[in-house]
Length: 231
Image (cartoon, rainbow, N blue to C red; front, side, top):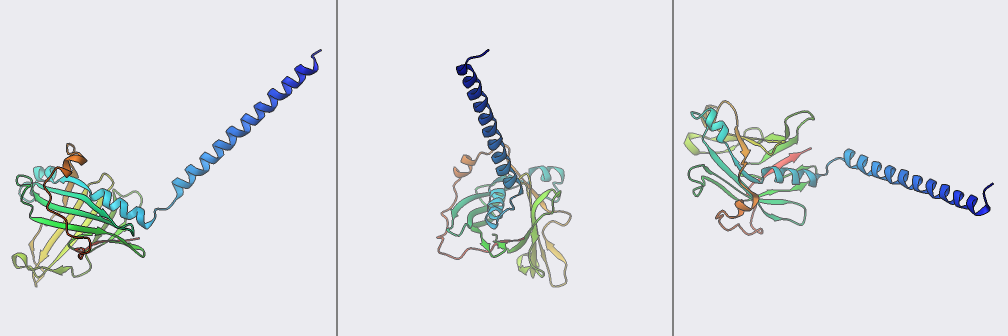
């Protein structure tokens, strides 16, 4: 027969075993609850603003598209980098486009693009766009276009222009800017499909900031246009 001390020892061991088992179950339940909450948590307006800004940021090229169809698409380099973050969660970016062979001479330059949150919408660009979240299963995250009728434009005989944009899941950006005359004839811009800007596989984030960007405008000055995300 066992002694009283042996019985107490067995009882203590069993007690500690049950306690450890209960602790493990508690940790597992808490971890599962936290994971479930994160997986089911809907994105906030600020999450959307951050997603759009992150997707736009970086060095991207239309090289692949220009190689496939050199008669209709130029090899263009697009660079966007963060400039400031406002107290309301807005993101301010610097943006420029240039031909690949002459990156030091950008033909399109926006010293400040503001991506902000107002109500159920987010705002960036020289042309204001209404962006919506893409449906689940689509290849894009956000897509949208300028308002009906577009915006006034006088380049190459145009009277107005339209602009479309799509943010893809792999940080690829598709843009489609077109100009029209009074009769509705397209007078500039590609016709078949948008420009496809893909991230550069070789450029690093630090390399972007080694570029000679011009000084940014004061944040007190008016932000030039906006993308607007509408949920």
